[in-house]
Amino acid sequence: MCALSDRHRIGVFCVGLAIQDTIFSVDEIPREPVKVYAQERREVGGGPAATAAVAIARLGGPAAIAARIGADATGNAIADELRSEGIDTTWLRAFDDNRSPGAVILVDKDGERLIVAYVDPDTPTEAGWLHPDSLGAALLCDLSWPQGALTCLEQAKREGIPSLLDAEITRHPREMIEPIIAACDHIVFSRRGLAQFAGTDSIEDGLHRARRPGHKIVGVTDGGDGLYWLDGDALRNARPPHVDVVDTVGAGDAFHGAFALALSHGRPLEETIRFANSVAALKCTVPGGRAGLPTPQALRRFDPTLDLDWIAAR
Image (cartoon, rainbow, N blue to C red):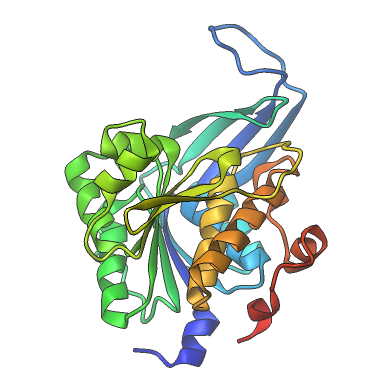
């Protein structure tokens, strides 16, 4: 187990999906198969774990990423962007015979989005090569790579550090997801992810069905309504600050990144939730996915009452 100073040097270890997004700005998302023209086109990195890592880095927290990409031009772009943000890419592995993940995203004038994602189905899933000396002070996983998530969750238990799961909708069968849900101690679903896992559209019923022994928090983000979570058997809610929404791409990832950063510093739960809500809300005010991920200075201007002194305390 590493010393505390070394853990804070590493900060948050993120494992999951790193993808390249092509984002088109349109007036509205089509409801039928037609041709539409975009006002703008952007190329930017995405993926829950990777964008959370960028959010952490923008906020001044060290971050590392473990993910699978292809040894191609797209993979090079993904890796270059992550390194430019100061993220440790030691465990970003490029496979010679596979294509890198990619997505096309339509964002309408209200900031809502439609995502079509592709992950090469032949990308190797085994995680025997994933053996970092330390995961740092906290672990963040998504559901895109169950073997990698479980490998790191087992290590997090051995190291005694907190873990956070971004439980988005997934293409993996329930029997692969259930062990990850059970092994992680902080679970935050998306609304659709909770409905898929719990088999109900009810937030309260879904959270009760999803809660497992050992969970320190089980919650769900619901857009402008913020975070719902179980406090004992009671359902609680914390709403984010009101903003003029321009682009919601990456808002959930920003929330999870900020939440994991606060966990790595041992911040109280309600402070952690308020911090994550503010980061996600501020992200939504800028178009372009990661372009809106805020710095501590931007957060201070946005809400001077936030306590951010701990971010620089290492």
